[in-house]
Amino acid sequence: MKTIAILASGNGTNAENIARAIQKKKVKASLALIFSNKRDAKVLDRAKKLNVPYVSFEVKDFESREAYESQLIKLLQAEKVDVIVLAGYMLLVGDAFIQAFKNRILNIHPSLLPAFKGTHAIQEAYDYGVRVSGVTVHFVEPALDSGPIILQKEVPLRDGESVQDFESRIHKVEYELYPKALQLVVSDKCSVRGRKVIIKK
Ligand code: GAR
Image 1 (tube, helix red, strand yellow):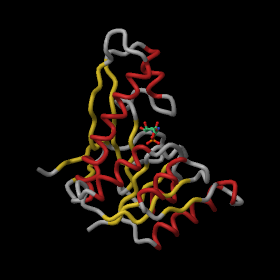
Image 2 (image 1 turned 60 degrees about the horizontal axis):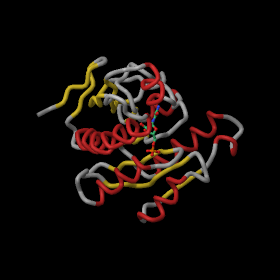
Image 3 (image 1 turned 120 degrees about the vertical axis):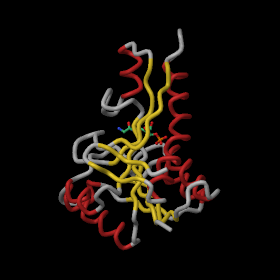
Image 4 (image 1 turned 90 degrees about the horizontal axis):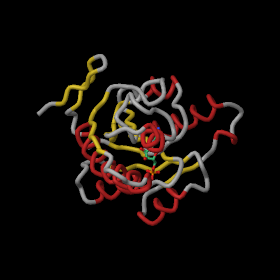
């Protein structure tokens, strides 16, 4: 069975949802730890409540971003982590990190990539006037919100819908899609060829 770690910077609803999916054996993996680069992140309270080990340190604790990441790589390697789940981890992942865990880092993004990359995807899609947005789970590459796509699901905007309602429906789809994509990865059903992810039936 594969060992995973979840990295999150904020609220952590996706982290909690994945931890629960593992506890219910909907995702067949073992969860080594939840890490946050923010000591006061709500995700750490969620980890406590779920009885999941957690660790936190911040970039500002180190001399450089590289030193921070090298500590994080050491931590994940010491825990023998196979797959890393970014769940609202709002830092760009560096080259050394990606090399250390090539095609073993997943990210979730609340839009149909490559549209609306960045930190305000839902608001930006809403303001743009899209009829359809959605959710993407993808492998991580050095560039922001890029990398081969594992799963996507569309969320159509309803007539007259508020951005808050649109956002909460997008989050619901995230809670469905991320465990599904993770289960495909931890059961070795995904292989990456160029930009394409081939999923074994
Ligand atoms: C999620 O909607 C996730 O897709 C998004 O941050 C939110 C974190 O919520 N990630 C990005 O925008 C990545 N570019 P959560 O902390 O409650 O899981």
